[in-house]
Image 1 (tube, rainbow, N blue to C red):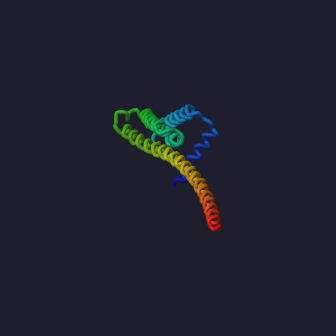
Image 2 (cartoon, rainbow, N blue to C red):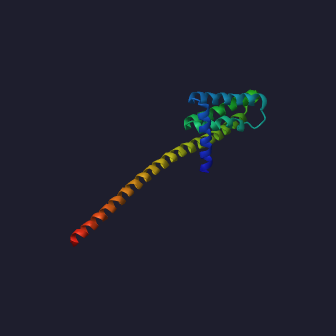
Image 3 (cartoon, rainbow, N blue to C red):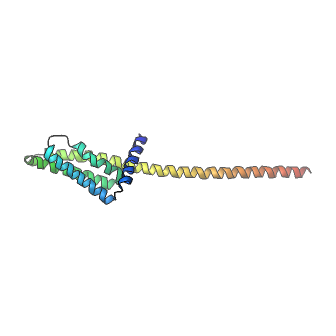
Length: 167
């Protein structure tokens, strides 16, 4: 499971390095993509399942942005989805269904973006802890080698002392 997460993190970081987008430009691109999906939904897909289309921009945002930004994008996606639903069928604005559906999408988007963002943060913390542990292991190995050298020197001195006492 962690290797799949690490592979996904590495993929999105690699894409980010290749594109060299600033956080501001990346966020603007995410907003524009969400608006594009909302416009597409209201004009062409009013009766189709919409959630997968909104996940296309949300998943990269969740991998590349901190949790508060990812959550804000989840809220924005649910709001755009609600607006697209109401624009496609304005008569349903007085019914509870579009709002209930938007709440469900908000919960789903929030769960997905939160889970991904938190997993990425934990993976980063784990990577830092692993590096610190490896550094401590190297320090311990160096101290162990120095201790072994000191022990050998003490044994040599002990042997010299034994020889001198016999004389």
